[in-house]
Image 1: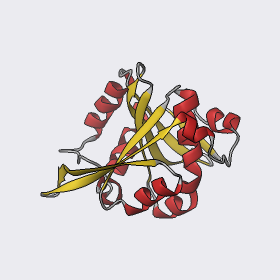
Image 2: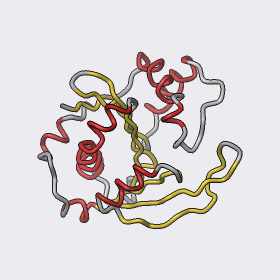
Image 3: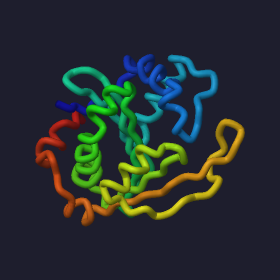
Image 4: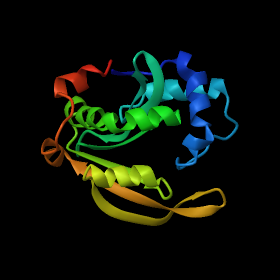
Length: 183
């Protein structure tokens, strides 16, 4: 099954390879300038020091398959955003549909948030469609919000409240989803 573990500096090369993979980076707001392993290690150390950021390597059956982060964690207003990816296309097709319960349960019951809001770059049609399927509320579109590849891109904004999530069907027990996160 799934396990979510905190990244270590030993993961720097793998994360750098993933983050610079064209199929992954094309839907990110930024691209890495002059990527190298030492910068990635420094980034990992910096993220560990932040109170508003939490991240995990996604493992499936003992094998690293992706990355998950929670950012802009606001402990006063109890809201945050998340981002995730699964690196290999075959794993995305097989596993992506199962991750939603883990991501949401950890947000609301692990981090104690009341609201999760997410931003998706235009063109990331599969993920935008998934947000609609799982009934995240579509807040709107930020027009020409990100400049990348020499042009401006729209950004789709979605949100889910904890009370909304509690009414959703769960394919895994909350004890299972939360136990998958190694702190």
